[in-house]
Image (cartoon, rainbow, N blue to C red; front, top):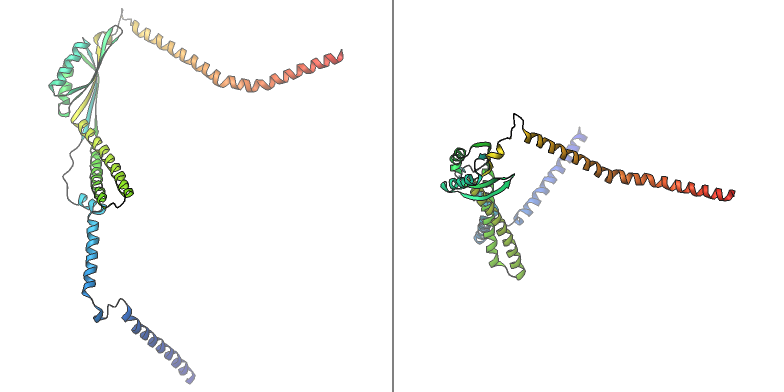
Length: 310
């Protein structure tokens, strides 16, 4: 028992010495940690200085991309009106191409639109035409109704709609960020100390202004296309639209089939000639050259044997 108590006493003494040593180390190190526990070393000016640094840091963030994004996203904005581009394509049959196209031009002026392109040409002894116009999007349906009433027949009509709202909103966000960045870059010109720095700032500013012009141009195009619908009209005279028949026989159909067959035959012949010229001729040359050389060598050998026999 005495030996056991002796061991316990030794362990307890060692633990006590370790605790005393830790306490001494802590007591010596606490006064040196930033001097915050020393009341005599407390300086109100240092706290004010740190507060000023924090304030300057906050002001620096006020013009950053992060703050700009918060000011853009933060306030609630009104829902974006849908931006839809509507276009139409028509093929119409008329009695007189020139008169009908002139009447269509008057319809365009009546809805305060304008003519993009107008063409008239002669085909098989008669005149055909094509006209492309821009009309206000809210007048598109009424304009198409007037065109249908003007012509003899509408053989083809297609109306397409493209929603570009998402692209337009994305361009708006890009434009806002680019303009804010360009304003900050302009402010750096006053801070430039050397010519090189000024040139770098001007170069970056020029790039930003180019992007702004590109995005602005695209936005204006989308706005204009949505406000003014594009209508393309093919004008065919009634003589071309009406099939030629003789006692139920349609010679134009037979002629068209014969011409198509001739074109297909000539096309197939041309394909064969091209194949022979580009594939078989090189292959025949590669394979025939060794055969030709062997034949020449055999003839020479026979000729030498004949001369030796003589």
